[in-house]
Length: 274
Image (cartoon, rainbow, N blue to C red):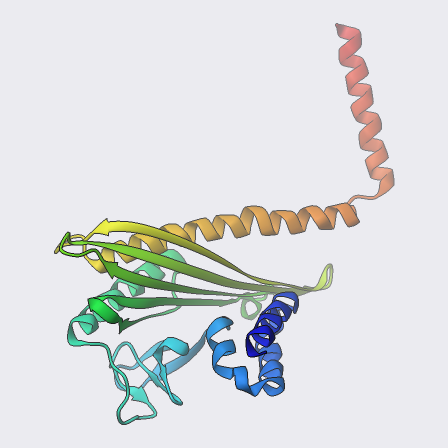
């Protein structure tokens, strides 16, 4: 019965407004508390920001850096609030995590011109490992007199499986982007667009001292984010614009009639010349 309930909950969440995902998820957890862990691990929520007082840097919270009610900072590797017997990555994996955080902080500044990023790694069986790359950019133009606010949240989960002694690994990437845009002005009123997009990719790369795991993961995340952004821009926003224009023309019927008559006159004039 619990499996059927979980399927129904996930199906319901796909049909509810994305901009209210946190409130809707809280309501579901109240209805079916037995599915709390399953729902929290299956439903992506907008990323929350916390402050690491030790390293004096912001970091992102998610289910992958949580242990009980504490969250681990990728910068200081400490839990807040402090937790005894907490889970930590192995020493080797922690080195990869530190390098990945430095790389994606640069990536965020280059592509997003600021924001908050965090990378967390954890060990799997047979010397394999997994990592999650989190990025959040919030822009509020209303402070500058422009009626627009927007948030970009991206979650990239990578599972790395080593291929024997070949110094090759298979990287399985699952990426989710959550985007919300809100405008409010006199001409259009309040407009809120929000949604999420999930895609998967799997590739095999060789790894060595130059092409490290961080380099390979970075290439996949960069390519995936470019594809997701293009999909959002050309399909989702383009389709929304097409639907709105179908429902209501921005130009009045009289103006459209004038343009049609002018087009016919130009066509007739060109035909008479021929």
